View 1 (cartoon, helix red, strand yellow):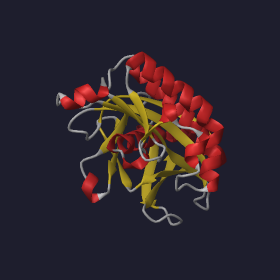
View 2 (view 1 turned 135 degrees about the horizontal axis):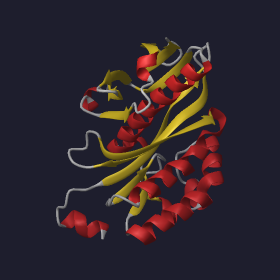
View 3 (view 1 turned 180 degrees about the vertical axis):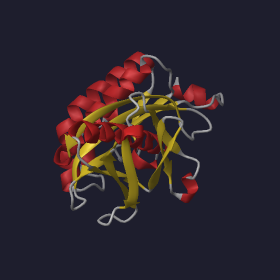
View 4 (view 1 turned 180 degrees about the horizontal axis):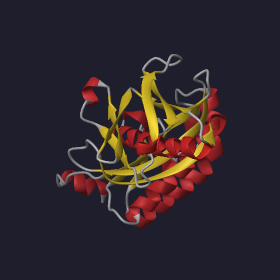
Length: 240
């Protein structure tokens, strides 16, 4: 089915997911991964045409566990929207997730820590990928950051994170630091948090989230470079 659509020249619709942004301590060290988003991306592949976002607030040390949730959100999005392929934020040369095996990892250029983390989640992501393939006749590819839809998912997750952490700052009546995804900047427009890519070749890519609870108007948000991580920016979010 997937190959037939390519050969027929049909515009490819891609579902992708990623988790992004981190609550930082006063030393700008990441503590918790804030949000996960799944997106449907269609030509011209600049932003999501449909999306789901959820807070995760996962400990950074257990960050690999969010990959399972990313795939679950992809599955949820596919219940409503048709796609031709799923891109997962795992960099394994665009291998099919359903057919991955521990033996394959030994021949891949990945760190021992990454290999150990993947082995822990492999049964779950293979199971979900198999369900997606059977139900929707599409592949789940471990393509990672090479994918533009994954980048859009990252920006979208970051936009949701701005809303979630702003609400947390308001609820707790204290300022919080939020680390944004790599090479992006926040703009607030039309009651939305919008993250625009700062990478020159991605100048037209963005991810956004609607501020349904109107939290952005209740806080002062100041963006600065992250002094601990070149290429990253941070937000100081202070309730007003």
